[in-house]
Image 1 (cartoon, rainbow, N blue to C red):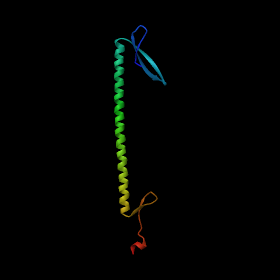
Image 2 (image 1 turned 180 degrees about the vertical axis):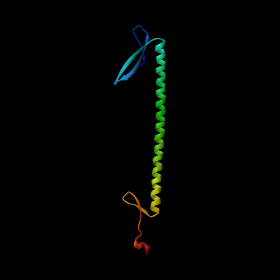
Image 3 (image 1 turned 90 degrees about the vertical axis):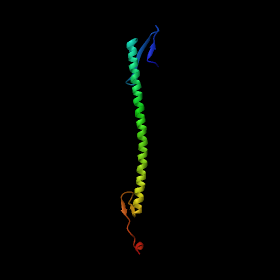
Image 4 (image 1 turned 30 degrees about the vertical axis):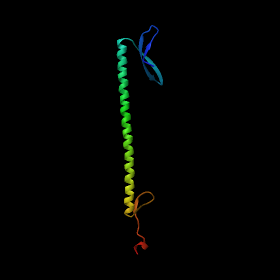
Length: 109
């Protein structure tokens, strides 16, 4: 629906629509040069909001990509840490701290 409405006499009148308490209310602005100026200002505001929304979406997508890469890096670091501890003779106690394994008596002989 256009903000410009044609009335019975054929003239165009400019209205602003806005949401108040969940309902759409129309605000009469008028016709003529002032209404055209208000329409141009509203169109400019609308374009600026759309550009800001695009910028926020692009930034969010970039952050989501970086978050995924960070998670992959953390998983790789955990895997390398686990491999280093196991190679050095440690074991993980009940999925918690790492403890050095005791040498068994039969292994020393």
